[in-house]
Amino acid sequence: MLDLPVAGLRHQDEGDHDMAHNTLMLFAQLSGLWIRVLASRLGCDTELARTVHDTVAAKLARMIDAQRKILAADRTLVAARGTSDEEDAFYDLHHYQMAYYETWLIEPVALLDDYLVDDLTHEYFNFYTGEWHHRDSEIPIAVPVPAGKLCGLSRIIAEIEDVSGARFSVENVYYSEAEAEAAWWASTGANPDEVLAMTEANHP
Image (cartoon, rainbow, N blue to C red):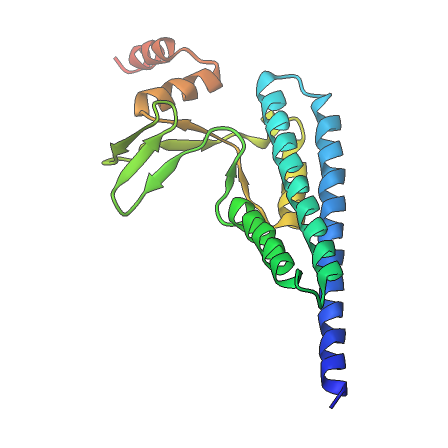
């Protein structure tokens, strides 16, 4: 009869060890990627690329801190095993694990512009004005930033996604078609009036 609880405790200890090992591995991987982001930033030649690098570094710092809290809570739970503090330690660990899950693993994390659409009420939230608006078109318009404009950061972001399970977006968000069109013309470097004049001249 003594074999059953001993076996159960052995499996529990093995599970705790595996979880702590996985958390420690993720902590180390994210820390290494954080250093790579800082190094990559040194080679940025645009304000856009530097801004996104800074945002990724800040997000990684938060993810690393979250893993540090999970590790600390796991150690506390192991130390409290079999004592009156075990239940509280278990709930503390669960709290930190759920906080990480809800923050990083449910929705994509915006690294530039963010937007929010409520499909149930057909509304969208304008982050610039802080107001909800009725949505009767494709507004807001989210345009992904090309990887070539991020000075190599896209590869690091892909690695972060691979090791952590988080998903990130790097998008410019526009709240009117006119704003999106103006941004598109600006990205091409062309003058719309000149292009229109040339088109009309070729089609009299």
